[in-house]
Image (cartoon, rainbow, N blue to C red):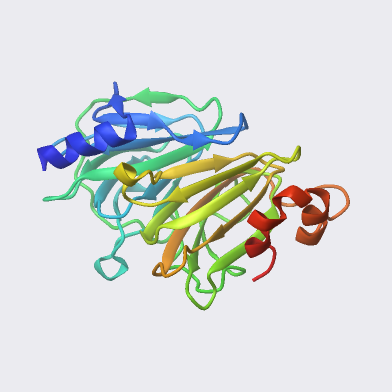
Length: 285
C-alpha cells in the first residue's frame, strides 16, 4: 500500500498538505469562480477536523473508499462513505453545507482519494478536538446526495439541496448513449470519473481555443483525475472507442442557464470550421 501511495503522489504531483496527507489543485482550462483540489490519505491517517467557509462538494475517485465523519450542532453526528460500490452503501459524491465540521479517513484496507470543489476564496477553519463517533448514516435532512446515476444524461441525479449552489450531478455514458453532446453552462463546472471509463472531455473557449482531456484512474498513463471548465465555455464528453460505461460527476458553481441568444452546436461548427473534424463527434447524440 505504501508503494501505491508513493506512485499516486508522484504521478499526480501531489505535495504534503497542512491538513494531512497530500494534495494538488485540479487542472483548469482558465481562471474562474471556483477552485478544486484532489487529496490523498494513506492507511491509518485522517484529515484534521475542519470547517469550510462556503458549501463544498466532495467527489469519490475509483478504487478508493473514503469515510467522511461529520458533526453539526443541529443534526448531531453522521457518517458517509465515498466510493464506487453503491451496493455497499458508497456515495459517488456528497455536498457539505458551510460550517459543518468534518474529517476524512481511509476505510480499513483502502486509501482515501477524493476531489473537493468550492467557490473561489473558500477558506478552512481547523478544530482538532477529538470528535464523537458517527452515530448514523448521512440521510434525511443532513447533507444530501443523489441515490444513483441516471442512464439518461439529460436526466442526471443531483447531489445537494435543489436551488442551492454548489450542486453536484452524476451522469452515465454507455455504449447506447456514448456522448454528452456540446453544450454550454454559465457556471464553472468541475468534471471527474466516479467509476468505469475512462472518458474524454473537450472544452472550447469563446475565442475558439480547444482543450482536450482524458479523465480516468491511471495518471501514469496520462489520465487526469478531474478538470474544471469555466462558465460560458462549450464542453462535451464521450467514451473512447470500445471503452466500458463511465459514471461521471459534475459540480456546478452558479446558475447554469446562459444569458442572451441561444447558440446551437451547429452554430459553433460554422463559427470555428477549422475545429469541425474534432468537434463533429460531439455535435449530436
